[in-house]
Length: 167
Image (cartoon, rainbow, N blue to C red; front, side):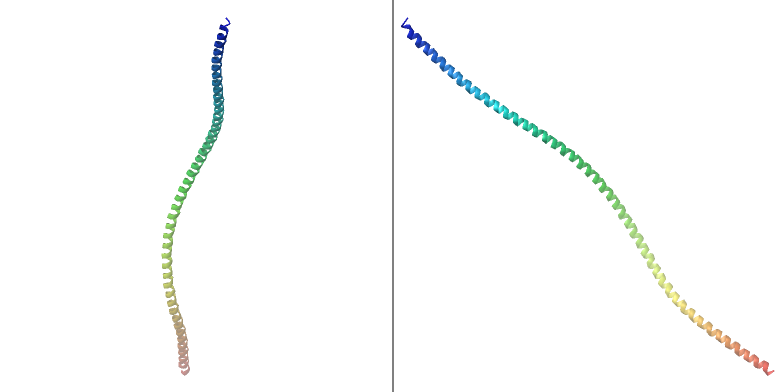
């Protein structure tokens, strides 16, 4: 057996080395797997943090989009109100333009009437001046006639007095 002992020891040594090599390989594989797991867990943590950040950003963007939609609705309402107001102002302007045209027509008619009245006034002024001149002439003639009548009456009276005095 003593011969066999070195053989058994060599065989055990060989098995031990083989097992040690396998164990070293398993340890190396386990270390690599552990590193991969840690790396994966870090990547998962980074991804989770990024996902949370993206979710937060998505929530903020959704709120912004909702605010923009609300603002857009307000702007549309304001635009509709202003468009309606503009249309009403256009109608009012058209009415004022029509009224202005009617008033211009009335002014034109009144200007024609004023012109006719001024022409008539000028004719009447001329006629008045002519009548005043005739009136003055007639008044002068009446004075002359009254004086002539008075002179004639006086002359007739004198003649009557002479006729009655000679008798």
